[in-house]
Image (cartoon, rainbow, N blue to C red; front, side, top):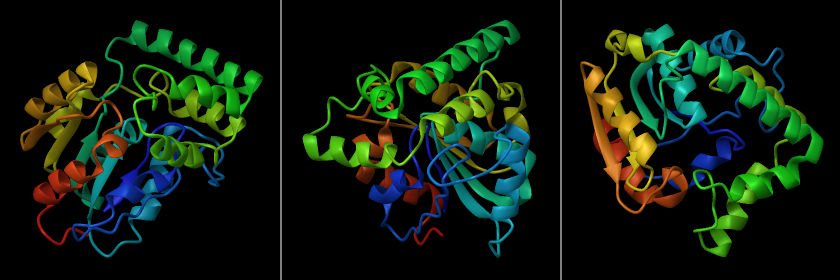
Length: 242
């Protein structure tokens, strides 16, 4: 299974999901980890992902978390022949209204400037205490593990990813969901009301879609409930998923 991580993370995010017959192929997205891709934008990202997924012998299940989920959804719409089925975790189809999308682009740019100004460590301190993305509810060991993944990024890389891959820069695809040619599973944490609603709406809009809500989890279902998530994905994909 191919897996695309969330903003400020890397492919290492999916290490807790190893098991249940799955092998996760999880690259670092542009602007993250050690990936060096220029320019960092949606067209280039789609092209690079397409080249990468073509290296597999057959279409492969694709999972995306948060920012990675938005990218995965767009990719599955643009390259349906390379995707076997699609799993979106705490993801959205983008910002519907053009005015709101432009406002989000300006917000993303302002946050990018802040990252560049205060540096990675200070920004991650803020990010880890955010009500949606925060990790304060986790035990100390889990917080250290999560921080070790995020600290592999750079301030300049994350700022570039916000400007090029943020919700303000990505097209809204909610009106294209009926085009999705592969089965869709949307997953959300029961404590993440906004994405619970979005996940349910997307699943209903797709011809072959289903939604699963995971108890005890917030936005970061991968971190909050890895065993429940991998069991859900395994059931969706069938025993012995690639």
